[in-house]
Length: 141
Image (cartoon, rainbow, N blue to C red; front, top):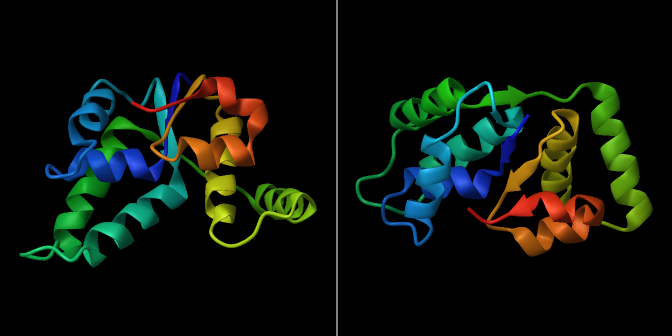
């Protein structure tokens, strides 16, 4: 797989008023299911973020699903199995990672699983700290 998308990039791609919208949308729009992926969990994260944004008018669940459908049309969702989850949790505990960083670790596990050559994120520092061995593959759009 050529590219893997973090949730931060996809939220920015769908929010026209986001500071990183243009750059995020450009890399997303150039992607296809043949060469780009995201974590299956990213679909849930995107739905949760978009429907909770304090914007007027609020983004409805139906509208958020249009974004989810667009992602599924352009990116291959990567799922983790029970062993992937456990190994990621075990590695995080062994390294002393805590809190919400586990979600980034799970997404990075998805990037590994699809052998992504480029990992797009706006949380570059967090991702590099979690998976320094993948740092050369991580990019901001």
